[in-house]
Image (cartoon, rainbow, N blue to C red; front, side, top):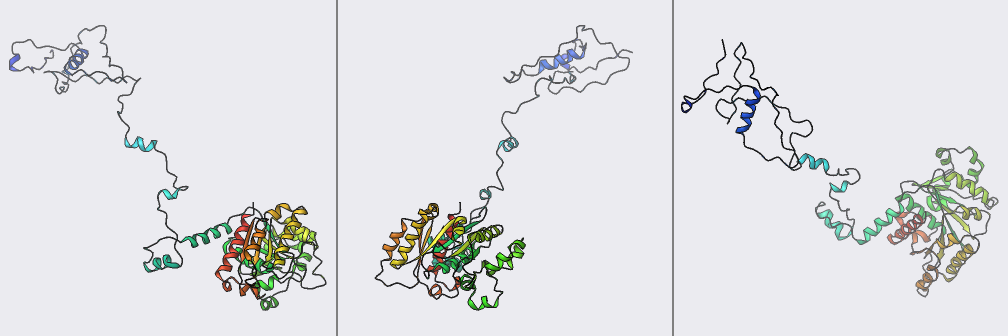
Length: 418
């Protein structure tokens, strides 16, 4: 029996012949005719309708009645949805008119969470110590933090200079042409200051041929006598067997984190240290310490002095406020400059210690001006009984002004390591 199309016409269409779709292409064309036309976007070529087959002969009538397609919403009466046509493979089905949030995130640069933590954490002011700022901080439990004052900021800057990380080992020689003007006390005070602020322990060597007392000034006479009295001579006798810091420690003394090598106390052998022997010790010490202080003897012509100056990276010239002390310091710098050590003389740090508390008749400013122009830096150490007594030197027993002077010397020494 032939298939009969259902009558979907309204009463107004009565009497009109029932139209039959001859093919799916005609049905698609009829459906497209009912849709509003859209101008093609400039980025996309206009859609070309699919061309009908060359032979538009009617499709054969099926022997079985086919299911009616779903009506097209908004289409003409009796219209059916055409089969889906795949979009052209050459272009995208659609294009976004503006970037999405995901696109903006992908295109934005990735912040450096490791290298720039300050981008995400507010910088906290350092805690003030002492003074009105410190009192306000303590009373408010930290709620009122005005930050450190100018004096504390200067102290913190000195600490940063002293603690600067170093690559390699450096040696500073402390010398003078006259004894008793603060050479050994400066070595101990600066050594203890370096030990307080640096992450690596410093080492101090007593190379004074005249029975130096470096270790006694750092430990105290009583403690030194009770300890094992190993000296630089013992170290030289066994230097070939030392291959670690542990074995080296047997020949050293310790004042806190300051490590010391004692000078020879026997007058018969105290002046026997040669330049070659000192250089052997210096090479050994350089394997384990980044900062070395060498307390030299009085003068610049004794046996070990050429080896000390040859291995020195910078110098500290000890002087006093007496007219004779200032002249000897100037003579030392001139001797160095005229004997091949011009760089050491130019970069030297001159330390004037008011050890004997000179009278007001001495023009300190004139002496400082006399020496300041021939060295890299001049630093004055005020009179302090903790230094003038000739006994144990400890930072806790020194005046704040004296401790600050030693900090300035230590910072100037490390600044000279290039």
